[in-house]
Amino acid sequence: MILEVKGLTKNFGGLMAVKDINFYVQRGEILGLIGPNGAGKTTIFNMIGGFFKPTKGTVYFKGIDITKLSPPKICKLGITRTFQLVKPLSQLTVLENVMVGAFVRVKDPIEARKRAIKILEFTGQVDKKDMRAANLSHGDRKKLEISKALATQPELLLLDECMAGLNPHEVSDAIEIIKRIRESGVTLIVIEHVMKAIMSISDRIIVLNHGEKIMEGTPDQVAVNPEVIKAYLGERYARN
Image (tube, rainbow, N blue to C red; front, top):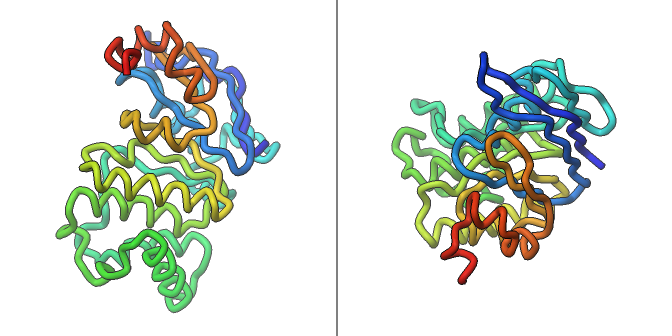
């Protein structure tokens, strides 16, 4: 087990954003996290990554309590996340953006550049390495977000809607990249609204609604669960 979350709860004033969430992630697994907007998915990522401190509950990474650690310390331990709204360093090149991630592990610019080139080859962006990030398409910015995260050499990668707004070809490309990331030895938790994607890549899926876990199971189990269909997938999905 690489990650375990126990009793994770987050209040914002009088709003209960996440309530008593428990789950685990096995090393090498892809865990999907789905639910309507406002269900608490990104809030959970923010607590795992140290951006929010839980009101209650504990996060364990490789058996270590990381609940009170800062985001930089959590990143150095081996957890990296992407963000829904991609904000690359727009005046830097694609290569320089990825080098920033590499500097988490190395201090030598030459070594950081070598590592960044390898990552861009892995994600299929090496031909754009000298472009300014400001000039990238939406799809390429999403891919750059993944490249920057991979440059930190994570053991656990949290992907937050990395396929939002992509066309079908770009979605297929992202699915293949995620599969290759897992094959490279990285464990993933993926938040995604693109059902074709999340159902095809996940080993297990957790469904959230109003900050609570309403279902956990395989993609096939989730797809036919009446409560999940009512809360999120919709009857059209059930008929398909």
